[in-house]
Length: 227
Image (cartoon, rainbow, N blue to C red; front, side, top):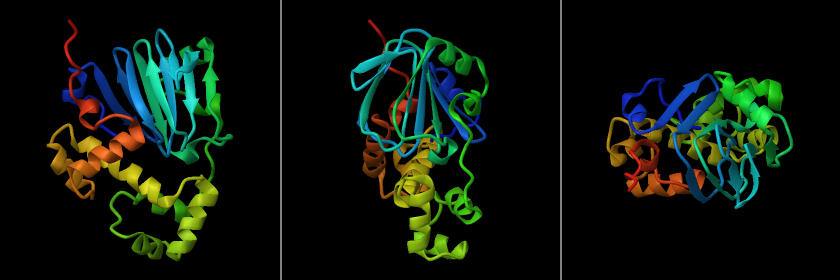
């Protein structure tokens, strides 16, 4: 998920808002949007205030819950709110779930959205795994992070896959992308990549396209003016 403190000034002016509240991270745009094929290691809840959302060009609905690791394109026909949740935040089968208008409006009306009531309670994680996941973004080596919680790297990877359903290395990429996108509000892309522990700006761009279907700059820069 992508994290930005509430009220970040550079985002409010562009018609894009990016903020976090506990485990829930929200990204909203005041107009329609479309993203290229990608697969994120998180749950994504897309809620349209008006219009509808399409996944892979079909299945029109006011809202949709997209599971982790599903390659897909997405488009909305109007303003929307996207809520990103770590994969252990929802305990349900990994399959897309269209949401009707009543459920969509109820989720949009809550701040933060009452996800547990609509989607189920989060899973209970092994404390060692929970600690490792909290420190993924800044871990130079997975072996060191595993040792910190008293596990071998192999056991930590296996525990992550069985409990979360997403490879640990992929979750680390997601955590680092979150750090980089947060930094983009204040620093150039190359510096944001460095702060996140990524090799360089092209690495950041490739990661963002692969996990979000859009460039990092498109999350914080103003959209082109309409004619």
